[in-house]
Image (cartoon, rainbow, N blue to C red):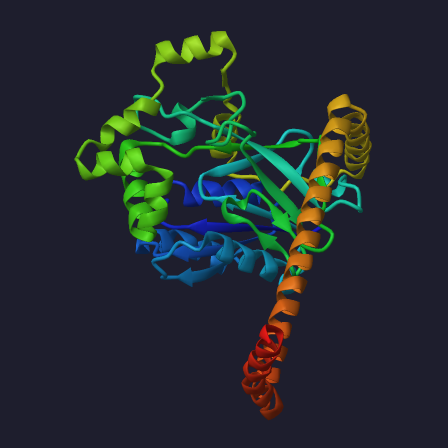
Length: 371
């Protein structure tokens, strides 16, 4: 299996090297990067990986942040030019963690009729002490992170490589040939570190504001308003987790201590790096059975049938709307055709003569009736 990672980088100076080292140690064969207005310090950190032949860089200097367009391009290049079997689309602050086996063993276990795997993502919270390596001090995360709407779990998507893939903004979904989603099985989770220090947070807000002011104001109006008034630190400190809040969250079951990434980098520093894990065919077969069992269990759940019923009703309603629109469009076209035919008839000489004679005949008819 050839596993390719796509990565969009801007000014994440503190994360570029740890992120690439992590995924290469986990079995990724190639990293395709798009740098968007990245400083030279970031580019310099990427050069050694390019020289080793494990990374490819695409430069983008556009001010508009076209994430979905750039990630889709990288995912298609992975399929068309690098012979990828699977593609991981990640952000520069996300570490996908395989909880059972290796990446390649898990992805080999996905049934052939399915082509995408959902990855739930959990946010790690910033701490008051900003000194040192982020993975050493940020060890408390949310048990389950929700989307801003609060109606769904925050998740990303990994998928089989296909030349017609279309990746959504945020890498949450992927569409394309053979990319039906496997639901009910989550052997990979995302460890997300969006806020690591106040300086990094401020750079991110300014970057978002410069990249697309209208989008920035829609997403983070409070942050940008505080930034304009010089009070941005207030927005950051709302998310900072002190020891008392951490203990309370853990007791209530909202937060959990997760030191897996910390131990990974500590072990890597002690051993000086490691070779990518070997592929275990027996373990992959066990995972394949586990995936099949998870699919069956999910489909046998009562809520699954309710969801399928609602999905059928939604599809039917959409089809009804499309049929109504088609009938409406046909009626409007026929109306326009009739109007054109009537206009053509009125422009002929015999219609014009008839229009002049008609009042005369009506007047003569009226006079006869009066007599």
